[in-house]
Length: 274
Image (cartoon, rainbow, N blue to C red; front, top):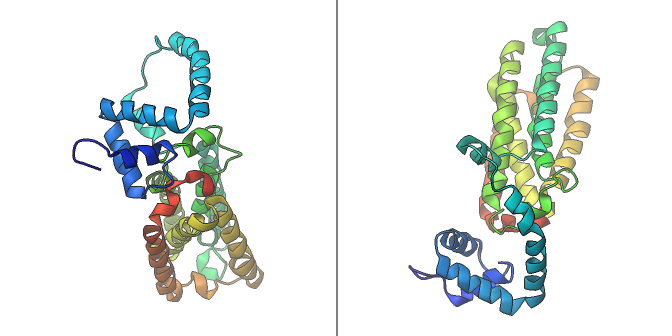
C-alpha cells in the first residue's frame, strides 16, 4: 500500500473478504479506509464489480433499514466511556463474569468455613483459579450465546486485537476476585496466578487451531479429570498446585504466548475460531 492510497491489489483483495491479504495488510487498509473517502469509493466500485449479487442484497437491506435508522437519529449519542466499553465487552459476557465471580465467592466461603489451608485441606480457590477465566473467554466467543456474533465475525479487523481485548476484560474481573480469595485463604499469589495465566494463554493458542470455545472446553475437561478429581479424592495438594510446579506453569505460559504471537494471522477470521 502506498503512502497516500491503497493499491488496487489491496482494494480488490479486501473487497473479496480480505482472505487473500496478509493480516497486517488488512489492518493497514482498514485504518486507511477510515480516513480516506477516495479509497472508500474505490472499494465500493470494486465490491460492485466483484460481487454484484452481494451489492444488490446490501442495497435491498439498506432500503429497508434506512427509514428505521432515521427514526433513531434523534436518540442521544452514547457517552465516550460507553463507546469504549463496547470495544472490550459483549453483553453476553456480563452474566458469565457474574457467574465466575459468584463461583469464586462460594469457593472462598467454603475455604473459610473449613479447617483452613494449614490443616491439609485443599483450597477450592486454588483448585478453581486456573479454569475460571477460561470459562469467561469461552463464553465471549460462543456463537450460540452472542446475538451479534455474525456481525462481529464479518469484520476483518475482528482478529487478534479483539481476541486480546475480550480476554483482558475477563482477566480484569477474575484476577482481582481471585486475588482477594487468595489473600483471605493464605494461598500464595504465584500459586494461582501462573496457572491462571498459563491456562488462558494455552486456550488462545489452541483456539487459533480448533476454536477458542472448543479449546476452553477441552482444557477444562483435562483439568477436571487429571488435576481436580485426584486432588479432591486424595485430600491433598498435588505437585501441579505446589510451588515446585511454578516453573512448569511459567514455561507453559511462555509457550502459549509464543504460539499466539507466531500464529497471530490465524485470528483474522473470527468465524473459524469460535
